[in-house]
Length: 252
Ligand code: PEP
Image (tube, rainbow, N blue to C red; front, side):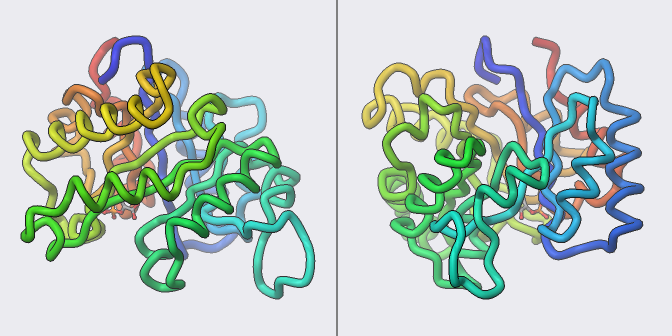
């Protein structure tokens, strides 16, 4: 944790669930959220953003999308613009998730353009970075993450409250996590890197860890310095697990 930053636990539901299940999950999270030290963010599939936002209206739980197009609107079949997400009730948007970088060939330059679109629409971007197993084995993890940070975050990202999630690709959905020492080292590197590029405001940027976070490992990970919360995939689909992770945030 970083002193002065309220931790954020964000759930990435990916391409899962139906309308009814989304409402039920959002309901359960909303009911258990009061009194938690952490802020909560739910990122359902596009189709359910509006229903989840309606369910969470008046609560402290925020809603986000999982991607947006770099243009606000126009002839882009199948895509969603940041203003549309905002209109549906979202306040945040995940960008540059490794599944999008891999499945859709998204470059960091494209992620930066999407960030600009999100900021323009008054959405807080949550940008994912992380190395592959081969890159870590080659001792290139910091070089890769440093380059992704430099190329994915546009001017204005930090002052607008943009969030960064360190998600080693090899830890996502695999049940494997880096050692606590490796997570702490990468978060400290990211803090230094962002401060060099963006100045002292970056000391207050939320740095999340993501990759196989579950109730059993959350407390140890969330207690590490410069870890200001978690981005949770699989475990966010079970309300009790997601809330157990949120409850594992150390007392500030
Ligand atoms: C993710 O995809 O952002 C993620 C962290 O997934 P999981 O928690 O399932 O590893």
